[in-house]
Length: 138
Image 1 (cartoon, one colour):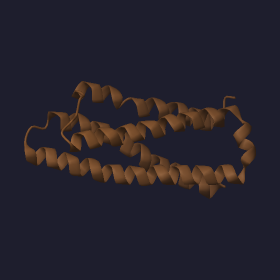
Image 2: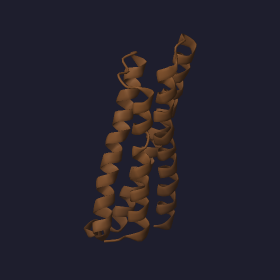
Image 3: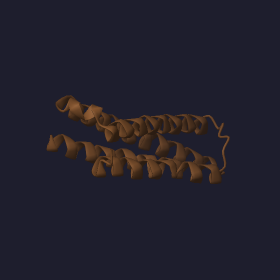
Image 4: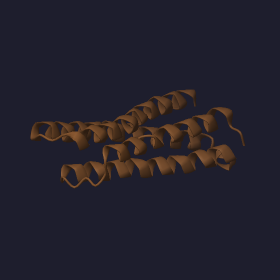
């Protein structure tokens, strides 16, 4: 179980690194005016999304493996709350994908300031998820 937990955390760090950086790329992409910069941001966003998606899938796989090994944890309130936040995080991941596609089609509808605010969401989720997993308050 400890190996699964270690791999789960490593994968989660990869996932969150992408979730923190991709919206930051969107902030810079909004300000790009020349074709070379726009093309560069689209390549960076696409490659980062692939890496963070691998991290996301690995995080979910290792997490699910731990639940399979200890299904009684599913009845604990802290894990139920954590899984709800993970579902929200998956929604955030999907939203990042949709924004990336809009940038690729030159159809972005948000400002750099908006993306700066959007970029704070994974920080809040990470903080609460870690507290739930470590402290297990309920």
